[in-house]
Length: 284
Image (tube, rainbow, N blue to C red; front, side, top):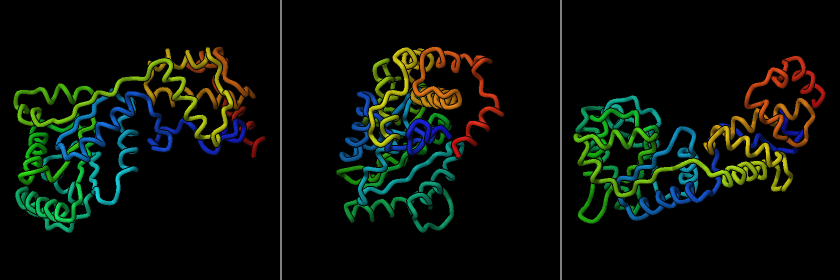
């Protein structure tokens, strides 16, 4: 609702991962390059970890958007499932016309599909988001999928995206064979202070057709970094709230005072519903 006031085409801080807003920080770019390399070289297992809101899903979306038609992908987001349900999910996401049955029968059908794709020189990638939720027994079943291979290469590239506890789970003795098969491991850390400012400016620029207009003072940007510790999702939340408050109070640039009041949820700056409604109506 503040788009017109600030000259945006859309919200610059939408919470939904969008590859158009991908910010090429050193860490996010390295994570993306690690995925590219592992897929191109058919390395098998890849693990990307990071704190909640650190940008793992956005990196994944950016990867998916650049893969060509010769790379088939299956994305699993529900990880509170058993091994058989996981196999069904993979087959369905790959659009395989399979016949339901036992786990071994499902695995056989997946193997037949992978061999056929290899015959056409296609690559197949399985991406499991929130992988830290998988039970150790299911993780072991996923390891078995890596046995689907020829003498020269893996038939299936498997990417685990998860929170830091995924690394702890993978360190379990019972998962040693899986751990030994991880070809690429990358941990995505938070943005630095400078990167946080650049991240904010990048998203603002994308949303306003590339203009270099300043929307936050230096003090406001530092307040965002101090409050969010460089976590992209938290940055989006607080920056969006600040712009909404700025819109209501006719502030063309968010200063440190308003930013701190938004962060602290000061009663003097909390948006009254009636005032917000009146403000929106004036812009209709």
